[in-house]
Image (tube, rainbow, N blue to C red):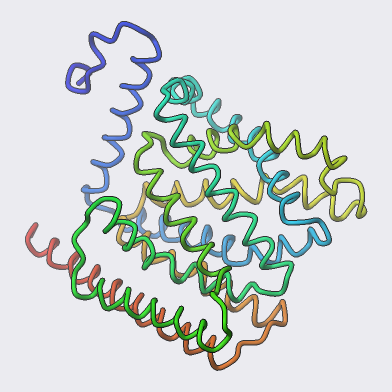
Length: 331
Protein backbone atom coordinates (compact mmCIF):
# COMPACT_ATOMS: atom_id res chain seq x y z
CA UNK A 1 0.00 0.00 0.00
CA UNK A 2 2.78 2.43 0.90
CA UNK A 3 4.60 1.73 -2.33
CA UNK A 4 1.37 2.14 -4.28
CA UNK A 5 1.00 5.70 -3.02
CA UNK A 6 4.67 6.55 -3.43
CA UNK A 7 5.45 6.77 0.28
CA UNK A 8 8.32 4.31 0.14
CA UNK A 9 11.41 6.09 -1.12
CA UNK A 10 10.50 9.56 0.16
CA UNK A 11 13.74 11.05 1.44
CA UNK A 12 12.33 13.84 3.62
CA UNK A 13 9.73 13.82 6.37
CA UNK A 14 7.55 16.55 4.72
CA UNK A 15 7.46 14.48 1.52
CA UNK A 16 6.46 11.36 3.43
CA UNK A 17 3.73 13.25 5.31
CA UNK A 18 2.40 14.69 2.07
CA UNK A 19 2.21 11.27 0.41
CA UNK A 20 0.56 9.78 3.50
CA UNK A 21 -2.00 12.58 3.40
CA UNK A 22 -2.70 11.94 -0.28
CA UNK A 23 -3.15 8.23 0.42
CA UNK A 24 -5.65 9.06 3.17
CA UNK A 25 -7.57 11.36 0.83
CA UNK A 26 -7.71 8.64 -1.82
CA UNK A 27 -9.09 6.15 0.70
CA UNK A 28 -11.75 8.71 1.73
CA UNK A 29 -12.76 9.16 -1.90
CA UNK A 30 -12.86 5.40 -2.41
CA UNK A 31 -15.24 5.13 0.55
CA UNK A 32 -17.87 7.07 -1.42
CA UNK A 33 -18.32 4.01 -3.64
CA UNK A 34 -19.17 1.71 -0.72
CA UNK A 35 -22.64 0.64 0.32
CA UNK A 36 -24.30 2.77 2.96
CA UNK A 37 -26.21 1.26 5.89
CA UNK A 38 -29.51 2.69 7.06
CA UNK A 39 -27.89 3.92 10.28
CA UNK A 40 -25.13 5.68 8.33
CA UNK A 41 -27.65 7.38 6.06
CA UNK A 42 -29.77 8.50 9.01
CA UNK A 43 -26.83 9.90 10.95
CA UNK A 44 -25.26 11.47 7.85
CA UNK A 45 -28.51 13.12 6.80
CA UNK A 46 -28.99 14.49 10.34
CA UNK A 47 -25.49 15.98 10.30
CA UNK A 48 -25.90 17.44 6.79
CA UNK A 49 -29.23 19.05 7.69
CA UNK A 50 -27.75 20.40 10.94
CA UNK A 51 -24.82 22.00 9.10
CA UNK A 52 -27.10 23.64 6.56
CA UNK A 53 -29.46 24.88 9.26
CA UNK A 54 -26.53 26.59 11.00
CA UNK A 55 -25.46 28.17 7.71
CA UNK A 56 -29.05 29.03 6.85
CA UNK A 57 -29.70 30.99 10.03
CA UNK A 58 -26.25 32.61 10.06
CA UNK A 59 -27.80 36.03 9.47
CA UNK A 60 -29.40 35.82 12.93
CA UNK A 61 -25.91 35.40 14.42
CA UNK A 62 -24.08 38.07 12.44
CA UNK A 63 -26.83 40.65 12.95
CA UNK A 64 -25.96 40.50 16.66
CA UNK A 65 -22.50 41.92 15.88
CA UNK A 66 -23.98 45.27 14.83
CA UNK A 67 -22.78 48.00 14.73
CA UNK A 68 -19.37 46.40 14.14
CA UNK A 69 -18.32 46.78 10.49
CA UNK A 70 -18.20 43.80 8.16
CA UNK A 71 -14.42 44.04 7.70
CA UNK A 72 -13.99 43.96 11.49
CA UNK A 73 -16.22 40.87 11.76
CA UNK A 74 -14.16 39.08 9.10
CA UNK A 75 -10.99 39.83 11.09
CA UNK A 76 -12.53 38.32 14.22
CA UNK A 77 -13.75 35.24 12.30
CA UNK A 78 -10.21 34.62 11.06
CA UNK A 79 -8.51 35.18 14.41
CA UNK A 80 -10.87 33.05 16.52
CA UNK A 81 -11.23 30.27 13.92
CA UNK A 82 -7.48 29.65 13.74
CA UNK A 83 -6.95 28.29 17.30
CA UNK A 84 -10.04 26.07 16.96
CA UNK A 85 -8.84 24.64 13.63
CA UNK A 86 -5.38 24.15 15.15
CA UNK A 87 -6.78 22.29 18.16
CA UNK A 88 -8.90 20.02 15.95
CA UNK A 89 -5.96 19.14 13.70
CA UNK A 90 -3.85 18.40 16.80
CA UNK A 91 -6.60 16.14 18.14
CA UNK A 92 -6.83 14.34 14.80
CA UNK A 93 -3.00 14.18 14.63
CA UNK A 94 -3.06 15.80 11.19
CA UNK A 95 -1.21 19.03 11.97
CA UNK A 96 2.21 17.70 10.80
CA UNK A 97 0.70 16.65 7.46
CA UNK A 98 -0.92 20.07 7.16
CA UNK A 99 2.41 21.81 7.74
CA UNK A 100 3.90 19.60 5.04
CA UNK A 101 1.24 20.90 2.65
CA UNK A 102 2.00 24.52 3.55
CA UNK A 103 5.71 24.02 2.78
CA UNK A 104 4.84 23.45 -0.88
CA UNK A 105 4.94 26.76 -2.70
CA UNK A 106 2.08 25.87 -5.06
CA UNK A 107 -0.21 25.00 -2.15
CA UNK A 108 0.65 28.22 -0.35
CA UNK A 109 0.04 30.38 -3.43
CA UNK A 110 -3.31 28.75 -4.23
CA UNK A 111 -4.30 29.00 -0.56
CA UNK A 112 -3.46 32.71 -0.48
CA UNK A 113 -5.69 33.34 -3.49
CA UNK A 114 -8.44 31.20 -1.97
CA UNK A 115 -8.11 33.19 1.27
CA UNK A 116 -8.73 36.44 -0.61
CA UNK A 117 -11.89 35.03 -2.19
CA UNK A 118 -13.14 33.49 1.06
CA UNK A 119 -12.63 36.68 3.07
CA UNK A 120 -14.44 38.62 0.34
CA UNK A 121 -17.35 36.17 0.54
CA UNK A 122 -17.49 36.42 4.34
CA UNK A 123 -17.31 40.21 4.29
CA UNK A 124 -19.98 40.75 1.63
CA UNK A 125 -22.39 38.37 3.37
CA UNK A 126 -22.01 40.13 6.75
CA UNK A 127 -22.36 43.50 5.00
CA UNK A 128 -25.56 42.32 3.28
CA UNK A 129 -27.04 41.18 6.60
CA UNK A 130 -26.20 44.44 8.37
CA UNK A 131 -27.41 46.53 5.42
CA UNK A 132 -30.81 44.81 5.27
CA UNK A 133 -29.96 43.01 2.01
CA UNK A 134 -29.78 39.39 3.19
CA UNK A 135 -32.34 38.44 0.53
CA UNK A 136 -29.83 39.40 -2.18
CA UNK A 137 -27.18 37.25 -0.48
CA UNK A 138 -29.53 34.25 -0.42
CA UNK A 139 -30.15 34.74 -4.16
CA UNK A 140 -26.39 34.61 -4.62
CA UNK A 141 -26.13 31.27 -2.84
CA UNK A 142 -28.97 29.89 -4.97
CA UNK A 143 -26.98 31.03 -8.02
CA UNK A 144 -23.83 29.33 -6.70
CA UNK A 145 -24.41 25.90 -8.34
CA UNK A 146 -24.99 27.63 -11.69
CA UNK A 147 -21.88 29.81 -11.34
CA UNK A 148 -19.93 26.69 -10.41
CA UNK A 149 -21.00 25.11 -13.71
CA UNK A 150 -19.73 28.16 -15.60
CA UNK A 151 -16.40 28.06 -13.75
CA UNK A 152 -16.11 24.34 -14.49
CA UNK A 153 -16.64 25.00 -18.18
CA UNK A 154 -14.05 27.77 -18.55
CA UNK A 155 -11.48 26.69 -15.96
CA UNK A 156 -11.60 22.89 -16.24
CA UNK A 157 -13.08 22.59 -19.77
CA UNK A 158 -15.97 20.52 -18.44
CA UNK A 159 -18.69 19.61 -20.93
CA UNK A 160 -22.02 21.38 -20.59
CA UNK A 161 -25.21 19.38 -21.05
CA UNK A 162 -28.41 20.86 -22.45
CA UNK A 163 -29.78 21.19 -18.91
CA UNK A 164 -26.63 23.08 -17.86
CA UNK A 165 -26.94 25.49 -20.77
CA UNK A 166 -30.60 26.16 -20.05
CA UNK A 167 -29.84 26.71 -16.35
CA UNK A 168 -27.08 29.19 -17.16
CA UNK A 169 -29.40 31.01 -19.58
CA UNK A 170 -32.03 31.30 -16.83
CA UNK A 171 -29.46 32.70 -14.38
CA UNK A 172 -28.31 35.26 -16.97
CA UNK A 173 -31.95 36.19 -17.57
CA UNK A 174 -32.37 36.82 -13.83
CA UNK A 175 -29.35 39.16 -13.81
CA UNK A 176 -30.52 41.00 -16.94
CA UNK A 177 -33.97 41.42 -15.40
CA UNK A 178 -32.48 43.11 -12.34
CA UNK A 179 -30.29 45.36 -14.48
CA UNK A 180 -33.28 46.49 -16.56
CA UNK A 181 -35.54 46.95 -13.53
CA UNK A 182 -33.08 48.59 -11.14
CA UNK A 183 -30.48 50.05 -13.51
CA UNK A 184 -27.60 48.27 -11.79
CA UNK A 185 -26.05 44.85 -11.32
CA UNK A 186 -27.18 42.71 -8.36
CA UNK A 187 -23.61 43.00 -7.12
CA UNK A 188 -24.16 41.36 -3.73
CA UNK A 189 -25.64 38.25 -5.34
CA UNK A 190 -22.93 38.15 -8.00
CA UNK A 191 -20.01 38.65 -5.60
CA UNK A 192 -21.33 36.08 -3.11
CA UNK A 193 -21.83 33.43 -5.81
CA UNK A 194 -18.78 34.21 -7.97
CA UNK A 195 -16.32 34.46 -5.08
CA UNK A 196 -17.38 31.10 -3.67
CA UNK A 197 -17.52 29.41 -7.08
CA UNK A 198 -13.94 30.54 -7.81
CA UNK A 199 -12.92 29.57 -4.28
CA UNK A 200 -14.25 26.07 -4.91
CA UNK A 201 -12.27 25.87 -8.16
CA UNK A 202 -9.08 26.86 -6.35
CA UNK A 203 -9.68 24.28 -3.62
CA UNK A 204 -9.66 21.59 -6.33
CA UNK A 205 -5.97 22.42 -6.83
CA UNK A 206 -5.12 21.97 -3.15
CA UNK A 207 -4.57 18.53 -1.61
CA UNK A 208 -6.30 19.36 1.68
CA UNK A 209 -9.57 18.48 3.38
CA UNK A 210 -12.01 21.12 4.60
CA UNK A 211 -10.56 21.50 8.10
CA UNK A 212 -6.99 21.64 6.82
CA UNK A 213 -8.12 24.19 4.26
CA UNK A 214 -9.75 26.34 6.95
CA UNK A 215 -6.55 26.17 9.02
CA UNK A 216 -4.35 27.22 6.10
CA UNK A 217 -6.74 29.99 5.02
CA UNK A 218 -7.18 31.47 8.49
CA UNK A 219 -3.41 31.20 8.96
CA UNK A 220 -3.02 33.31 5.81
CA UNK A 221 -5.61 35.78 7.10
CA UNK A 222 -4.16 35.98 10.62
CA UNK A 223 -1.31 38.49 10.04
CA UNK A 224 -3.66 40.90 8.26
CA UNK A 225 -6.44 40.35 10.81
CA UNK A 226 -4.11 40.93 13.76
CA UNK A 227 -2.69 44.00 12.03
CA UNK A 228 -6.22 45.28 11.47
CA UNK A 229 -7.09 44.75 15.14
CA UNK A 230 -4.00 46.71 16.16
CA UNK A 231 -4.65 49.48 13.60
CA UNK A 232 -8.33 49.90 14.59
CA UNK A 233 -7.83 49.46 18.31
CA UNK A 234 -9.69 46.15 18.58
CA UNK A 235 -11.87 46.09 15.44
CA UNK A 236 -14.99 46.85 17.47
CA UNK A 237 -14.06 44.70 20.46
CA UNK A 238 -14.83 46.51 23.73
CA UNK A 239 -16.60 49.40 22.00
CA UNK A 240 -20.22 48.20 21.91
CA UNK A 241 -20.86 46.32 25.13
CA UNK A 242 -20.35 42.81 26.47
CA UNK A 243 -23.08 41.23 24.30
CA UNK A 244 -21.40 42.23 21.04
CA UNK A 245 -17.99 41.19 22.39
CA UNK A 246 -19.28 37.69 23.16
CA UNK A 247 -20.64 37.27 19.63
CA UNK A 248 -17.30 38.40 18.19
CA UNK A 249 -15.34 36.02 20.43
CA UNK A 250 -17.57 33.10 19.44
CA UNK A 251 -17.27 33.91 15.72
CA UNK A 252 -14.69 31.15 15.38
CA UNK A 253 -17.02 28.59 16.95
CA UNK A 254 -19.87 29.59 14.63
CA UNK A 255 -17.53 29.36 11.64
CA UNK A 256 -16.04 25.94 12.43
CA UNK A 257 -19.08 24.16 13.94
CA UNK A 258 -21.09 23.76 10.70
CA UNK A 259 -17.93 22.91 8.78
CA UNK A 260 -17.10 20.06 11.16
CA UNK A 261 -20.67 18.80 10.98
CA UNK A 262 -20.63 18.96 7.19
CA UNK A 263 -17.32 17.05 7.01
CA UNK A 264 -18.77 14.30 9.19
CA UNK A 265 -21.89 14.14 7.00
CA UNK A 266 -19.82 13.91 3.80
CA UNK A 267 -18.06 10.83 5.16
CA UNK A 268 -21.37 9.07 5.90
CA UNK A 269 -23.45 10.05 2.85
CA UNK A 270 -23.18 9.68 -0.92
CA UNK A 271 -22.04 12.99 -2.42
CA UNK A 272 -25.29 13.23 -4.39
CA UNK A 273 -27.29 13.46 -1.16
CA UNK A 274 -24.81 15.87 0.42
CA UNK A 275 -25.15 18.16 -2.60
CA UNK A 276 -28.93 18.01 -2.53
CA UNK A 277 -29.08 19.08 1.15
CA UNK A 278 -26.96 22.15 0.36
CA UNK A 279 -30.07 23.90 -1.02
CA UNK A 280 -31.50 23.99 2.50
CA UNK A 281 -29.01 26.72 3.51
CA UNK A 282 -30.03 29.46 1.04
CA UNK A 283 -33.70 28.52 1.48
CA UNK A 284 -33.42 29.22 5.21
CA UNK A 285 -31.44 32.40 4.47
CA UNK A 286 -34.35 33.65 2.38
CA UNK A 287 -36.91 32.72 5.05
CA UNK A 288 -34.86 34.41 7.79
CA UNK A 289 -34.46 37.56 5.69
CA UNK A 290 -38.20 37.73 4.97
CA UNK A 291 -39.37 36.95 8.51
CA UNK A 292 -36.89 37.59 11.32
CA UNK A 293 -35.05 40.44 9.59
CA UNK A 294 -38.21 42.02 8.19
CA UNK A 295 -36.99 42.40 4.62
CA UNK A 296 -39.51 42.58 1.77
CA UNK A 297 -39.37 40.99 -1.66
CA UNK A 298 -40.74 42.79 -4.71
CA UNK A 299 -42.02 41.32 -7.97
CA UNK A 300 -38.70 41.69 -9.81
CA UNK A 301 -36.77 39.89 -7.08
CA UNK A 302 -39.44 37.18 -6.87
CA UNK A 303 -39.22 36.56 -10.63
CA UNK A 304 -35.41 36.50 -10.38
CA UNK A 305 -35.61 33.84 -7.69
CA UNK A 306 -38.06 31.90 -9.85
CA UNK A 307 -35.70 31.91 -12.82
CA UNK A 308 -32.76 30.77 -10.70
CA UNK A 309 -34.85 28.07 -9.00
CA UNK A 310 -35.88 26.74 -12.41
CA UNK A 311 -32.22 26.42 -13.33
CA UNK A 312 -31.41 24.69 -10.04
CA UNK A 313 -34.27 22.20 -10.59
CA UNK A 314 -32.97 21.42 -14.08
CA UNK A 315 -29.43 20.76 -12.86
CA UNK A 316 -30.57 18.81 -9.78
CA UNK A 317 -32.99 16.73 -11.80
CA UNK A 318 -30.32 15.79 -14.29
CA UNK A 319 -27.95 14.87 -11.46
CA UNK A 320 -30.54 12.59 -9.83
CA UNK A 321 -31.24 10.86 -13.14
CA UNK A 322 -27.51 10.27 -13.64
CA UNK A 323 -27.18 8.75 -10.17
CA UNK A 324 -30.12 6.44 -10.82
CA UNK A 325 -28.65 5.28 -14.13
CA UNK A 326 -25.29 4.59 -12.46
CA UNK A 327 -26.94 2.53 -9.72
CA UNK A 328 -28.89 0.51 -12.27
CA UNK A 329 -25.67 -0.24 -14.15
CA UNK A 330 -23.98 -1.36 -10.92
CA UNK A 331 -26.88 -3.72 -10.20
